[in-house]
Length: 264
Length: 264
DNA sequence: CTGACTTTGTGCACACGTTCACAAGCGGTA
DNA sequence: TACCGCTTGTGAACGTGTGCACAAAGTCAG
Ligand SMILES: NC(=O)c1ccc[n+]([C@@H]2O[C@H](COP(=O)([O-])OP(=O)(O)OC[C@H]3O[C@@H](n4cnc5c(N)ncnc54)[C@H](O)[C@@H]3O)[C@@H](O)[C@H]2O)c1
Ligand SMILES: NC(=O)c1ccc[n+]([C@@H]2O[C@H](COP(=O)([O-])OP(=O)(O)OC[C@H]3O[C@@H](n4cnc5c(N)ncnc54)[C@H](O)[C@@H]3O)[C@@H](O)[C@H]2O)c1
Image (cartoon, rainbow over all chains, first blue to last red; front, side, top):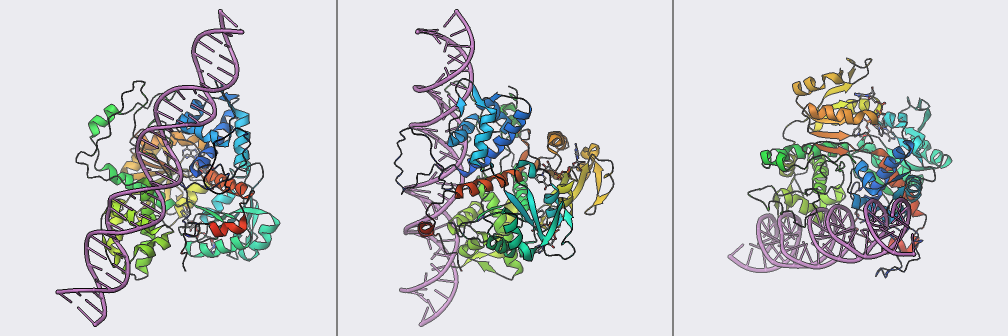
């Protein structure tokens, strides 16, 4: 699966994870599998943890000391049971009868997501999208400083975008090493994407975020995620089309769960 | 739950169930299918169909008349069995012993995805990202003409971006109606997102693609998908962190399910 | 026409993810 | 200290998605 796997995004087969298990509790254990003591956190849960983290940051700035799973769940737009289960993958940091301490939860989620260290990002392809990414101020603040930009266009080399001068793609290996780039973002035209990907991999980058609508081939040890806007639009289009056969529109609004209870 | 459901992306529970009721009365099963010829296509499959469509388009331009599920699967980066199952959701258009006729498959997938009709797109928030989206030439060619742009900044109103003059957000209802906008894209700062969303909904837009890192509240009949780059980066970060405990790198490649056939 | 070969379509088993429901555990109160 | 109400953490049921393996169905050669 590794080899031909497409870049998975939203959903993903659980990735085998081997996080340390601090709990000395006599777990039944006995995973039939080899020595995999891996306490796999489902990929879907990882993505949600990132969302919870953002919500928690907002709560903290707002002065909240603790939150219940219900409050957090509503704010994150998920089921509270799912939220608790997600949090349980990283340990037991809640207090029964009270909830979770915001600061503690933030710290633990950041630890699990590996946000305790900075991850330098390199953007390749400084066109429409590359410019937007380079200028975006939301990444550095969250531990992802954009520290290198690459393009092949001579007119762009040396020009600073978002404060960082663009380097030539041929210098990618040297620059990535110097700035300890750990995440590469591909924003080149589709035909150039695989080539750029190969160069990023050769430069030692093991995580890639791909905006080009192509399926990248990478070695097993490289993780790829893709953002495909055309697919997003087409999925929305599908839902529009699906509406055509409306299922009893009249009664629908009736049974319609009230949107309410937004409150709390 | 409908109200609080987060925007699902990759995966999505159909979330059909009603709110919780203390009574043990089990909700009646969903209509087992009255005369519903609608055979629910899994959301994950829909997203993949969009990918297949793109690959098929490439094959067609390249002159291919037919493809086997194996070829298509490799090109799309998925398992061939999965691909056949996905295609089976939309009908039986293959010829055993031969494969699928490219033209036919393209037509059928487009029909299912509702791409036989154009879907006008409106982008709200013409900043870094909004500019990139408006200037992107890949959407119109795929049946998603960007036909309206909105912002609140007076300096931008009337300025053409990507050939379309920016309209003021206050004109959103009128303009969306005139240009028959069916998909709204939110690219405003987070604090403005919910407000913009509400205005889009009020304007009759039923499908929204959200780039702002917030959980939008929408009525049941509106479909929201979100693209959250910070989450993508954090998921990658998680994988970087996970690599720290490397599971026997040497043997790893061995046991690794080969799944192989990367091909070659 | 027959038989060998190729590829689709799908039943089935398994794995993963979601949700329910409740015992365990904690804080507050008398 | 003992009780009570509240919330967590999780076992287990359930639903969905994935992948295998193979019969069905078609092509093609002779
Ligand atoms: N702009 C959008 O809103 C948008 C939306 C969806 C998808 N995309 C995808 O994102 C990618 C970039 O889109 P864009 O609109 O920014 O394109 P663009 O044409 O504006 O920019 C591409 C940039 O990549 C550079 N480039 C080309 N080959 C290169 C190479 N080998 N190495 C390094 N740099 C190279 C070009 O010089 C150019 O600056 C495309 O694959 C596109 O399909 C963009
Ligand atoms: N730029 C990126 O690469 C990037 C990456 C990830 C996420 N995002 C998200 O995308 C969104 C847009 O990012 P950006 O960098 O383009 O921001 P930006 O600040 O460059 O642009 C925002 C635009 O929205 C307009 N706006 C503000 N309030 C509005 C309102 N009520 N109605 C209409 N328009 C309004 C502003 O005038 C501005 O033009 C943000 O939510 C951001 O978090 C952006």
